Length: 131
Length: 163
Image (cartoon, rainbow over all chains, first blue to last red; front, side, top):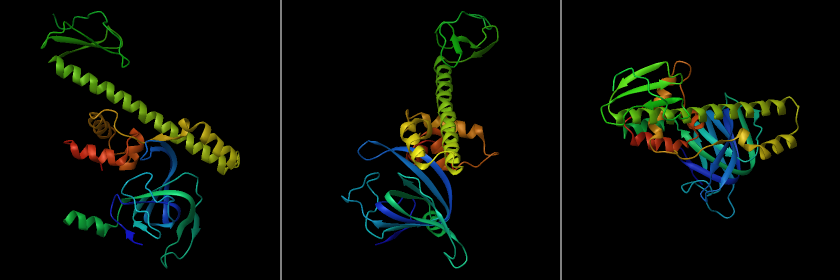
C-alpha cells in the first residue's frame, strides 16, 4: 500500500474508490491498450483535490493500459488533477465534510479503472522545479 | 516566365490551392486560390514553397480532425442530456454508444506524421488564448493525440508554446 503523488503516475484495478472535490470533465474516448486493441472509456477529470484508491486488484495482476501502472491493493493516487478512465458511466454522489470544511463528489467504481495524475500538488511541482 | 502570368491548372489538390510554374528552382510561381483570375504571385525557392503548401495542407487535415472531434463532443453531450432528461433510458444510451461509437468517441493515439507537432503548435498559437487557455488534455482531445505523445513531441521540438 502506498500513496503516489508524482505527475504521470497511474493505477489500474478492477474496483476503485474515487473521491474528488469536483469532477469537471466527461468525455468518451478510444485508447489503445498494451496489446494494441482499441478500448472505449468514459474519461473523467477531477479538480482541486482528488484521491483514487485501489479496492480490488486486477486478475491476473498484469498492466492493461500502461506498463508503469501501480496495481497493489490500497495503492492510491492523490493529486490536484487526476484523469480517470472507466468503461461504464459513473454517477458521482455529493457528500459533505470530506475535509471538515469542504464536501466532495465520490463513488465506488465497480469495474476496470485506469487513473493517472495530470497535475500534482503544488508542493510536488515546486520540488520538481527546484530540482 | 513573367510575373503575374496565369497558367492553366495543372492539378487540383483538396485545398483548392494550385501551384503552376516551370518547375525550375528560383522561378516565379503563380499561386491560385480557387478562382484562377484571382492570383497572388509569390517569389521563392521551390523547396520552400512546396514545404509551405505541405504545411498548409497538413494544417487543413488537422483542423478537420479538430472540427470532427468537436462534433463528437457535442454529440456525446447531447446524448447525455437526453439521458438526464429521461428521453432515453440507460439501456438505449449504452446501446447507442456501443453501436455508434464513431459518432461519440474521440480516438487518442500517436502523431500520424512526426512533423504534425509543428502544425499543432502553429494552429494552437494562431487560435490564441484570448478565448480560453487550453490545457494539455484539451489539445490532446482536439487533435486526437495522446498527452504523453504530445509532451514528448514538444520536448523534441524547438517550441514550448503548449501549456
